[in-house]
Length: 311
Ligand SMILES: C[S@@+](CC[C@H](N)C(=O)[O-])C[C@H]1O[C@@H](n2cnc3c(N)ncnc32)[C@H](O)[C@@H]1O
View 1 (cartoon, rainbow, N blue to C red):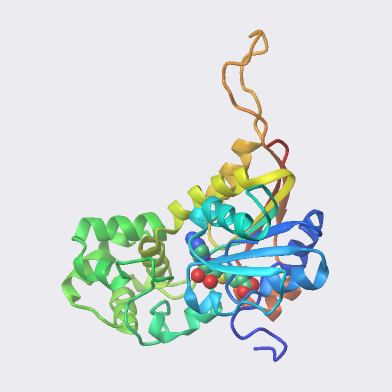
View 2: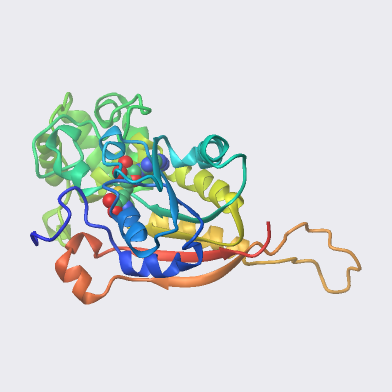
């Protein structure tokens, strides 16, 4: 890795994010996925007047809080962004209110995937854990060793979009108990037909599925997006960086529903649908070839940005 890169996590699409949050330069931004604080640091450098509330569910991440009076970092799930921010604004800014920007940089950090003991990696031997934070009780190992075959297949199919989910679930059930990530990866690899082993490691999709299920990531995203949009003041912006199609689909649909105003037939004298225009779609951004060359983990990233049009 480039020596100038952040060893905890190199922020993805950071220039684009800083640019899109210029409207919050002298306001409050919530970094809902603080991680190594890479995006936060870039915002602090660019905008001297900015204030940031950082949230992460992983205590390893909240330990990275910079020594800067403009930042507060809180341990929590961005699913509860409304309550967390209300508490922070209450104590530090004299009362509840709105914010000017929200950033969600989804998934896991390089630090999490590179720490064998966290169990996220199919390349490194470790316990099958995958819990992002202490708020999660069930580990991925519990799913692997305790779910019945059909439930396991459904998790792998739904959250991994893995076409061999049934065969993989059978192989896992036959090999139980499995307590090591690399042992699990080889059971999965043995269940995927050789002819289909193109496009990455054969365990990639199943590991993604187990991680998403363990941390209820998609529920957190749906709830967190709604709450984050509610929290924005007029003109406030939300930037969401996704790394796979399941995440991006949720973000894309939520922005699309916010950009659709009243859908009543024009002949109706009064609106009966109660659907109000809430957001302006400011587009989507992909990493440049240079960014991907410097940081291959940016490869699949897509950032969608929207602005709040009404309170
Ligand atoms: C891709 S990393 C963020 C990296 C960060 N932007 C940086 O530049 O260092 C994602 C982080 O979000 C955290 N995370 C994921 N889902 C979360 C949730 N629902 N609530 C709070 N934190 C979450 C993970 O623990 C991880 O630290």
